[in-house]
Image (cartoon, rainbow, N blue to C red; front, side, top):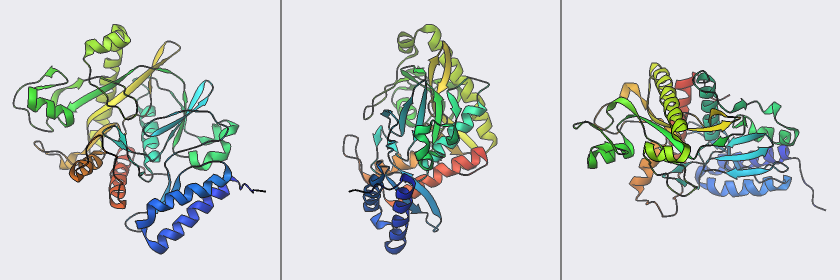
Length: 357
C-alpha cells in the first residue's frame, strides 16, 4: 500500500532536502533539484514545483513556486505568470515565480517574484481605490474556502481572492516617456503607436503629456498588437473606450506622482479592466515590474536606456545572448535569476517602504 504524506510535511521535506543539497554542492545543480522537489511533493497528491535558494550573500530566499496544482480546487486557467482557480462567484489568483519576456515564458523561475508582484498589486489596488474600484476582496489566506486550507503555506503572500468580472479584450497602456518599442517607432516614423510627436526628441525623454496606446490581449506565446483608439472603440464601444482611457490616465498620474516622491520614475505601465454588475473595475496585476517600467530617479539620464527595477534586465540578457523570438527560451543562470530578483525587490521596498513579510 502506498503511503501518502500530508502536503505540509511533503513540502517541508522537499525544501529541507534541496536546501541541504545546495549547501553541500552549491547552486549549479539547481535545475535538477527542481525536478527532485516535484517528485517529492507528488507524494501528497500535488506537484507544486518548489525549491529553496540562497542569495549571493548566503541569505535564504523563500521557496520558489513555478506551478500550482490545488487538488479539489477547479483550475480555470494558467497565464504567463498566474494560475487562476474558480471559486464560484469569486476567483483565486495565484502569482507564481514564472517570468516571461517578449511574450515567452522562461523555463526557470525568479525566487520570490510571485510574492513581490502580489504585495505590489495589493498595495496599488488599495492606494488607487479612490480613482477606480477594483476586484480585490482579500489577500488573507485565512478567509479562503475550506478546499484551499491545505495549501495555505503555498498560497500565503502570493494569492488574491477577487471578484469575477468580464474582462475587456484590450490592454490599456500609458506611456509617459519615449522608450522601448515607442522609441524604436519614433526613430523610424516620428510617431508612437501612430500618434505623431514633435521632432528632436531623445531616448527616454519625458513626453509633454502621457500617451494612451491600447493593445490587443494575446494568447500565451502570441504577441500583443498595438491598436488605434478607433479600433478600441470598435471592440468595446465608444463610451467604454473613453472611460477606460480616462481611468488609465488618471491612475497613471496618481501613481507616477507617488512613485516620483519615492525616487522612482514610472515610465510606462499597462492596466486591465473588467465589468461586474454594470460597474467597471480595475483587474489583474497593477503597477508591478512585470507590467511597468520603473527607473531610479537619481540615475535617470535622457539620451540612453535607463537602469531599471523591472524585467528590462532580463530582456537585455536575452538580446545580448543571441536568443531570437521563436527559438526555445534559454535557461536562466543563478546570476540572472538573482539580479532580476534584486531589481524586483528594490521596486517593492522603494514604493511600499517594506520588504516581504
